[in-house]
Image 1 (tube, rainbow, N blue to C red):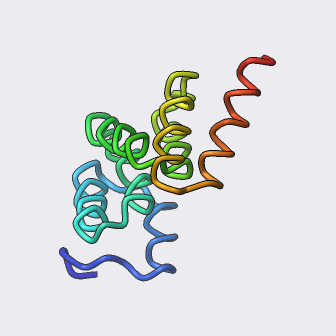
Image 2 (image 1 turned 45 degrees about the vertical axis):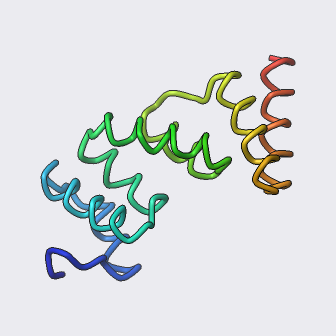
Length: 115
């Protein structure tokens, strides 16, 4: 894999399972981020212990109404989304016309209210 290239899916799987150095994991994550492939960058940011970058992605996911990205980042950070985050993501998703994401965020809010 050339340094600036994104790995193919099989190589990506092997890299995720491999013990990478934090620098190597961050370099791979940055390549994904540069290509706009944020969801695929999350595993590598987690391996790199890049909490600041994960926090940026988390905020971006909420602003974009992206439920899948929020879940992936929350898992990598080992910090489940708070009620306020689900509420904000539901609103952002609805505003962006992402009805399924908005509905899922509302379901998560209902679960949090029941729990």
